[in-house]
Amino acid sequence: MNPAVLIVAGLYDFSADLVALRLTEAGVGFLRLNREHFPDLRFGLDPLARTLSVGGPELDALVGPGLRSVWFRQPVFLRNLPAEGLAPAEQLARSQWAAFTRSLCVFHDATWMNHPQRTYVAESKPYQLALATECGFKVPETLVGNDAVSIRTRFPGLLIVKSLDSVLLRDGDDSLFTYSTVADSSELVESNTAGAPLLAQRLLDPKMDLRVTIVGKEMFAVRILVDNKGVRGDWRTVSRDRLVYEDVEISPSIEKACRALVDHLGLAFAAIDLIETPEGVFFIEVNPTGEWGWLVTAGRPIDKAIANWLAEPGCHAAAA
Amino acid sequence: MYKNGDPKHILLTFATRRPYRTTPDLPEHAKYDRIRGCWIQEGSPLVRSSDGTMISSTKKADQETGEDQKGE
Image (cartoon, rainbow over all chains, first blue to last red; front, side, top):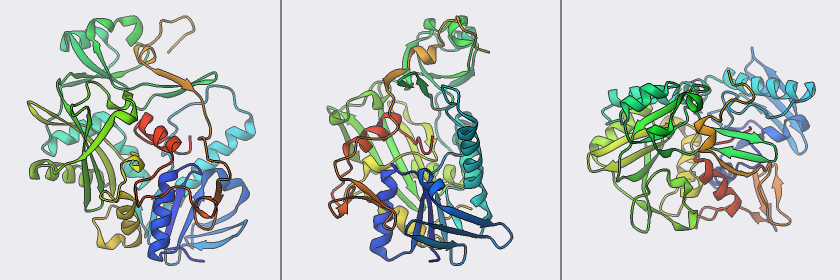
C-alpha cells in the first residue's frame, strides 16, 4: 500500500474519522497513524530515500511513493507540562515520538495541512495580532506582559484577560482550562500577575462572535449566538445546548483580510475568531489547529472540504 | 519563577476546573478500525457527518477548549 494521504492524528480525534470516511467515499488511499498506536507498529523511516515503512496489526504500508499530502494533527510543541513526575521510559517515549512525527517533514514534496513549522509560528497570538493589522483587520488594543501597573494604566475599568497560549493544566484528578475572561483591571495586582505573562485587551461590548473556518480556497463562516444575541465574554463558557451557529456571508473586505492572513502565515487550514461590534469587525485570533467537528452539517461540509484538499492539494490554495 | 506559597496567578484564578479524563466516554461496543481509520459501532461508523452527527463527548471536548489537545 502506498497511501496518497497520510493522516497523523490521535485515537480519539473524531474529526479525523469524518475526513477518513470522506476519503474512503472518494476512493482515495490514505493511512491514518494514531499516536496511541505507535508502539504497536513497526516503523522504518529512511530519510535519504524519503520513505516510511509501517507494519503492524493489519497494516503493511510504504509511505513516500505517490504521497500527495500530509494532514498533521499532532502538537508542534509541548504545550502542557506533566503535573507529576514521569518515569524515564515515559519521558523517553514522549520526547522521541514527538521528534519522530516532526521527522515526517522529510516528505517535503507532499503538501501539508498544516506544516508544523507554519503552525509553530502561527500559534503566537501577539504575532497573529501584528500580522492581522497588516492584513487590514481592526484589532483590539492589546498589551502582553506581567506588569499589572502598566495593564491597569492602559485599560482602566473592564478589560479582557487571556492567556498567551492555551492554559490546559492538570491538578491532581482535575484539569484546568482558562477561558478569555472579562475582568476589572483593578483585580490585576503585582502578586497575581508577575508570575507569568498574560494578554490584556480592550473590552469590546456588545459583540457577536464569528468563526471563519478556511480550508484551502473554501471558507465557512458562522455567527455564534445565544437567544439570538451575542455572548458577553467567551462563548465557550455557555452550555452548548444554548448555542446557535448561524451561517453568515462575510464582507469582501473581511474575506480579503482573512485570506491575506492565512497566506502570510502559510496555512492551508485556519479557524479564525472575529467579533462584530458597533465599531466594526475585529480580529481576535487565528487557530492553525482549531477544531471544527462541532460545526459540520450537511450545508457546512468542512470534513469534505478537508478531504478534497488532501486528495487534490494542487487544485486548491496550497501551503508548503 | 513561581514558588510554593506565592499568591495564585490570575489566569489560575479564572481557570475552570473539571475532572481529568484521558479518554472520552464511548458508546458500548465501539471499536477503532485501523483499516478504515475510524471508530465503528455495530458495523457502522460511530461518527458521521451527513447529518452533522458527532458523539456528545467529542463535541463537548472540542467546544470546551475551542482548539486541539491533540496528542497531549
